[in-house]
Image (cartoon, rainbow, N blue to C red; front, side):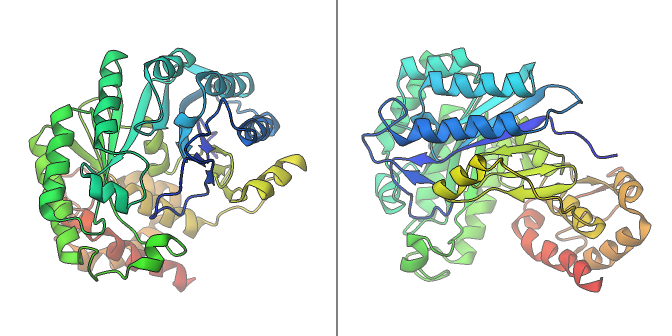
Length: 393
């Protein structure tokens, strides 16, 4: 029986400017525009509300997680966020203890705006810091600087925000190990309950792709970025953070509930330009440009009917579950997909044991896991071998 979604992602595409590494679907409004003075933002939000209202209600209960991503959701006013949450509540219901997360950028909010978000129901914030060096922030095309990071954290303190995350990026152009160690140390000193640490990926079509070649200066080479990854793992674990997913660390009780829906391959709603959803065994991504998205909503936001096959769902379950420290319960995996697919996976995983994949044993209670940090670091190679299974059908 297919499970019903209890999570929703809302894509808010608006940015002051496009970061040089970004390939997300965004709409640049400039430094002077935000939710209270942009002519286009209300048009988009009306379409977003309409898409939510056109979606089928879930019979299994209210939403337990909501995530506002982007883009820069903190360019919206508190009233606009509140209206979107009310629309979700009217269509699906919101659980009384729902985790409601929102991405927020330094320099885009003051105390009044932050308290407005809290009053609307947002109870978790994810702040895009990326680096603690102004030259690196400039090279990345970020609109904020270190002074704005510090001021934003002070606003968090004044608003008594207790559940928040900080994002960092390793492997930026001209970034040194000394820069990375400093960014980790300064982040740890502020004590966010959650930290996300991402390795730069140079995506096709971005300014970085036109300027830089992988493994060539000024990008750090693979040996340096691997060292950065391992250094983050060591320093954050020493500071009391649990490494619960490849790129994510949390203090006890502060793992992101919404993202765990993805990693457990559970169903979820996605709303907005370029957003993906996973409903009734169907994965679907919306149009990535504003006009195409508005046109799609105008004709009724019709979803495709094609279901993912068993092999695809099996591989996605492996790919997502192996991102986590908990890993995958083999007994449940075999019960869901059968022993034949599992045996084919074991044959692909065996060459990676014990260095990158933990051998199954009584000690790990039948959980299939990657080793930390080496297995996480080289997870793409493990997954590439696993995905060869699809070529056998």
